[in-house]
Image 1 (cartoon, rainbow, N blue to C red):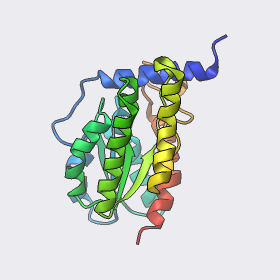
Image 2: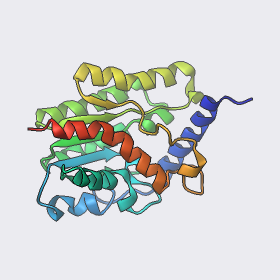
Image 3: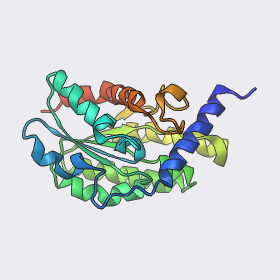
Length: 228
């Protein structure tokens, strides 16, 4: 009998590989309207940039259904108004996110939410390269006075158990070393659950994105309250 962990790993691999090959790469640094106009659209509240891949972009959904927009709405309901920029790009790697970072930092964000690395892992890129890119993103943000929330990722053991284990452990170790807030696993409760994904069985549907929003909000809400 196939174990639940292996089944989830296979689904996650298909999910992220599909994102890698989607070809949906926008011309600007972000994935859509929030990335283009969110800074000017709402004058109040701290700016939160969500720098990520297809999980952040809300692949296959309207941008309003992606978890960055849902978090913006949730924050306002909680009396913590914020402005969200969805900087998700399908298929992006940590190197791509690092290359796009300076544009977002020029928008003077209060918080940077980093959801990158899944595509690095599925392509078998060296983990020291992934760690170097994530470290550079966090350190550059911190140098600019930006608080950071790191979104943990996992990959299936298709490239070996040691690689997938070291990949998963990298996020916790880096967050501890750099003293940044960590979401242990962004897709907790969503990856591999059919009813929470689009008909292709690979991409989170609106309900799945709502769970992602709750998972991230548990950590981001506290971070926002701690802002001076």
